[in-house]
Image (tube, rainbow, N blue to C red; front, side):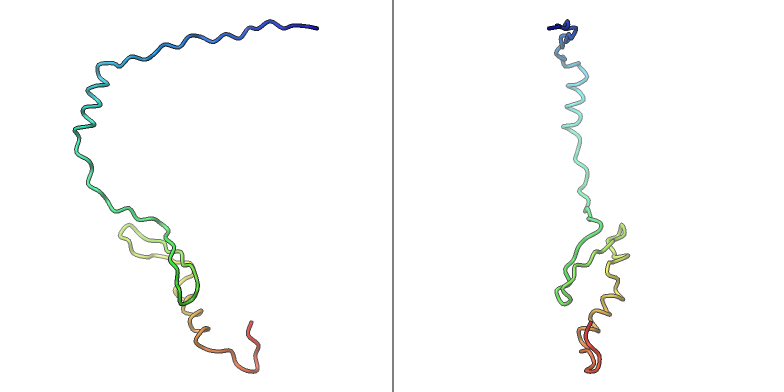
Length: 94
């Protein structure tokens, strides 16, 4: 049986002491007034259109206005039109 020497050594770790500037920095953070709360808008947002049974993904601009949606407004109108208009008797429903 061959034995291999163990050359692995772990250096000692020193504990960090608090430098004098750390206390002043902590006090400065504690006395600083918190920033005014801003309304954070999630982008994109999900919305359930219950009348169609679809989840709509809406993308908004910085003002909160919807700029794009999936499905688009045009596609949602097509879904609504199809729901309101029954298929013709001679043509099977897809």
